[in-house]
Length: 152
Image 1 (spheres, helix red, strand yellow):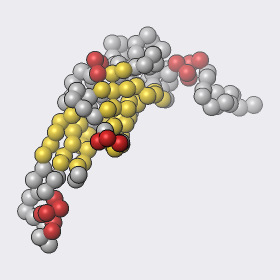
Image 2 (image 1 turned 90 degrees about the horizontal axis):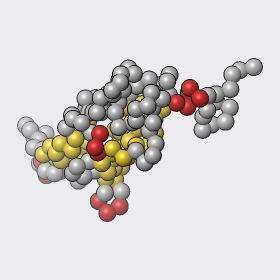
Image 3 (image 1 turned 45 degrees about the horizontal axis):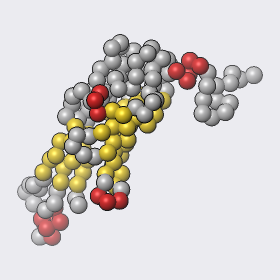
């Protein structure tokens, strides 16, 4: 249908449904208003119980990616923080997924999640990247050979 994903850096997001838009535009002129229905899929709130880490997501300070240690705070916060990117992926059987990217100054690495759309939402930890105190950075290792070598 005619739907749009709307997100916020504050961590809430939902879908606007413009199901009558085609009919309104068929009249040949722009309408004074366009009716829509908004469904909030995630309010700004604690998401820790909605996150599946799958054995990954360990921060160098002992916390895990169920929290977001904004600027290295301990304990980290249990909400999304500075969601700077969201993609909507439509799959077979009317299943929808969102990819959610944070960019909030997490010194242990920014979180990335794959989310299955539903009520309640479920977030699957996919990766963390960057951050000066990222455990891979501290160990001097990388998935790409040679990246952590010093220039000679």
